[in-house]
Image 1 (cartoon, rainbow, N blue to C red):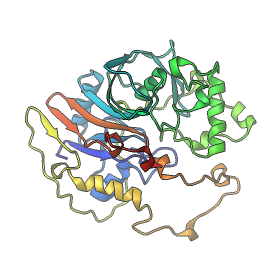
Image 2 (image 1 turned 135 degrees about the vertical axis):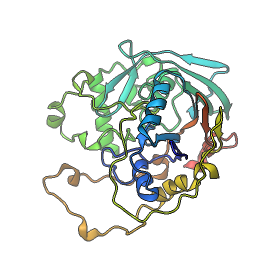
Image 3 (image 1 turned 60 degrees about the vertical axis):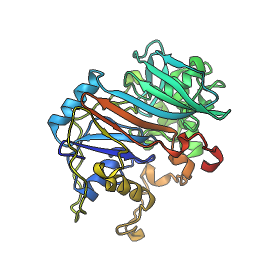
Image 4 (image 1 turned 120 degrees about the vertical axis):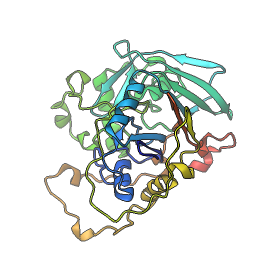
Amino acid sequence: MDEDIVVVNKPASIPVHPCGRYRHNTVVFILAKEFNLKNLRTIHRLDRLTSGLLLFGRSPKKARQMEQQIRNRQVEKEYICRVEGVFPEGIVECKEPIEVVSYKIGVCKVSPKGKDCTTTFQKLSQNGTTSVVLCKPLTGRMHQIRVHLQYLGYPILNDPLYNHEVFGPLKGRSGDIGGKTDDELIRDLINIHNAENWLGIDCDSDISMFKTTKDEADRESLSSEHTSVVHHSDDDGGVNSRETTPPCPEAQQPELGGKIVERTNVVKEYPVTAQKSSPEISSALLDSMESPLSGGGCNVNKVTVDEHCYECKVHYRDPKSKDLIMYLHAWKYKGPGWEYETELPTWARTDWDHLDSV
């Protein structure tokens, strides 16, 4: 962290900013409450289940500068993922256009009507059943890496959305979604969510929009052609620096203890959780995730139930630990005169055993 930018290594399962049912337990709220880092500008976003490098601008000028660099494709982005199957050797390039099927529930597919995008992939290791793959998105479409891997037939191992037979028997490989129309795909996704109570969709999608009755669903247009777009979220470098950290209740703030980073022609922070990039920040994010009731706990006497509220009538099961992570990690970001990277997650190690995560 310095006077212009804050860099954190985001744990999986924490949303970047308030959205849907998440507000207090988000990265921007934790940074504001624990470290008094308010009015941060989101330079790019990550899906709730995606971990890794997350950049915030501390000033409008810096945020606009980095936003422009991303928009002009001056920023090189590298992601690490673990996919299903043995990925091919060499560099694999996917240029299939991606279309947003529904902004409302956050789902995309490869389609000739979609926007042009390119991702390159390279296998780093494999254990006979899964592969660790380096991903370099050259564009920043919504769910670009996940959708391209699905199209290639090597979906992310635990992707709750794109590694699912709701996309047909081939799970979307080569664009085959079992002959479903967009409306049929969306309705099937809604039905699966209602049955499983855990779909793992993006934080920008409000679960309350998943209606339980056919009449309610029919009253809404499920086609993206009729959906009003409020903002664009993706895990591959979406830009929205105009969005700032919302107000946060005042609290006594701890000392950061981080050092100002001296800028050179190329500044490389490795890992982002090292001392000079404020380890306390990433630690606070993890602590908030692991101890959600710390700092006052939960007063059940303040819990209210509205008999007419849809949310109050729905009982969601608590997710298991394996539901709170996806094997996709933002590893490195490099731009003109700056570079950041994180340590690799445990699931990216060559000796990783999937039984350890069950």
